[in-house]
Image (cartoon, rainbow, N blue to C red; front, top):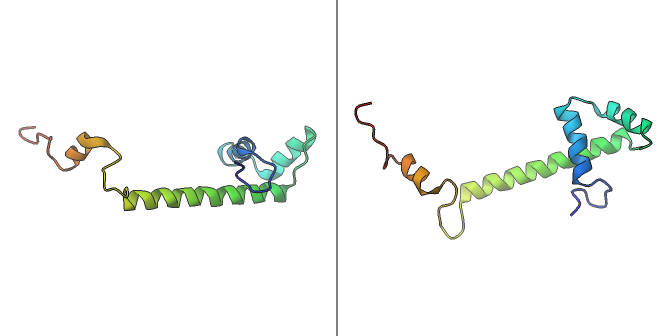
Length: 99
């Protein structure tokens, strides 16, 4: 599945551009120059569009994750941290005496 419909960049290229921009603090215009010297021509506007679309996808996934955590599973089963963490949350297996 391509992250950008009808687009050429795959997940690896998008991850590289995003990590370079946000992780390595390498602005898109500098990336454009580096890639032009390597014989790859991708306009800055196109890169901006890619980053915008990645942001939309990340926001969507984050919203979906939050929604599923708030609603919980449809069948009512507890999922997540397991029974011991759930019990500790309610103080059932904590010894609070004498410490």
